[in-house]
Amino acid sequence: MKLLIEILLAIFLHPIAFILCLINIAGRSDLTTAKKLVWAIVTLVWGIGPILYVLVGDGAFW
Image (cartoon, rainbow, N blue to C red; front, side, top):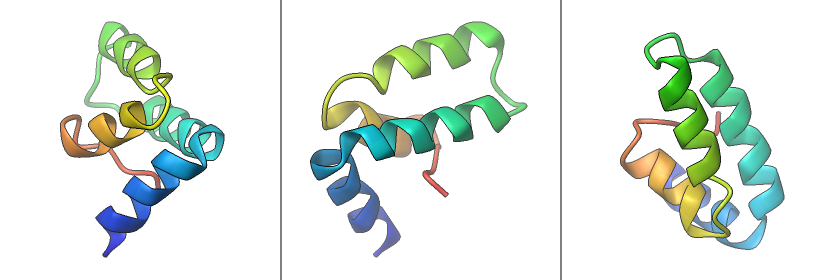
């Protein structure tokens, strides 16, 4: 259910999802600075970027 809410949030409310992703990316200690930068750029893509971060990057919005 959480994944479905995150996907809908990413599609319809991208600016909020983008900010939540950036907060999560900044707080992750398992990523190098280069990986954090790449994920920040990926999440810029409208709709699909945050979804990729959640599904592929083991990220979360909250």
